[in-house]
Image: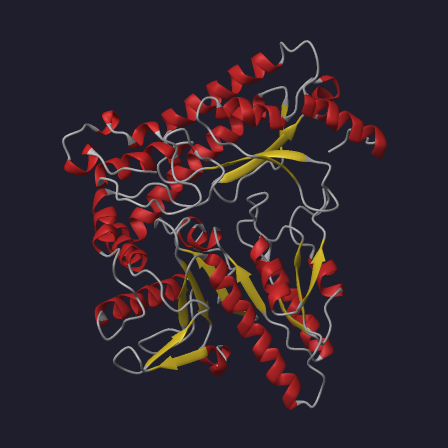
Length: 470
């Protein structure tokens, strides 16, 4: 890309510049400079054909913040949280956020500062919770003079991919309980049946990515208490509450799923989901400092003072921390409750409208979080010339991203679609979505021949001898 012409002098309009009739750089850094406004326009235009963030109903991540929250983040974009000597008040605000999250989950821990850590999303928070469980188990096995080379972790097959990463990276056996039509959430008896003395923890999920449902942590805690008492094991619970961690305290405060339960030692969540902060931000909290192994705290003094930190990542943005603290101050319990109540009401509205369509069948009758999935009605599917993947493509033409995907192992023959309702989704937008779904289905029903995805599905069904029951 040779831009050494009048564009450097600033007297040529953006779309009259030589740069705009050349392909964008793809392999090497350009030799010459490009005017800032032209470079900005090139990058901005490349994102233009994409789905607008608020129409992306696939993501759980926050796509809307108010002007003041956005302003705070923009002003802090150059601040590295870990430079505590340079930005000490950021560290204080982070600690305050951890206190608030811990108390939101009914921590029994006393003292001015609760035990927790900030992460780049709930994935890092999950990793930290998992590592703590592994190190605690390892130290206990060492103290007992027993082998500690075969740790395992138990959860359902509806896990988020971070847990697969965690088990591979730390060489921990992942033992999974199938999600089935009979057990759409964690089967507690089956989970306990695959536990043993090498189990570092059981991981229930509050707000399952695949379905939007919650595992029954209170029932798991009761069963686990009896199991640990009978076996002499000390298997704890780490809760992956990436989505539900910010829903349950505000919409169902009476529900016991958190630190009120005996065996819940740690909980992780995502601040950039229903914590209402732009990505990436996560939080993990332990019931007490004794559950956070000392080996997880690392100290350095090359930033001007001795700094101790718990985290997989060292440098991290401060902007998200400021935004979380801003949300807590600005919204309060009242504001979070209002926003999440609206999201639930709109999700229920969409759930009801889609459930009434003859071609669809909702996966569950009730909603626990502001998201849900549905399938094609089995009887309708027998004669259909299209699949949910075709509907996804149709909706993308209207700007919506509504994902179609297959379910986890053991029910992978089921294809579903999912809607995630977040702050920024209004009733009017929901009406537009339902209208676009209705129109897309009407077009697909006019097809004379099956689509390629329908042909592929029929071929697979014949090979597997599929019976149309859900």
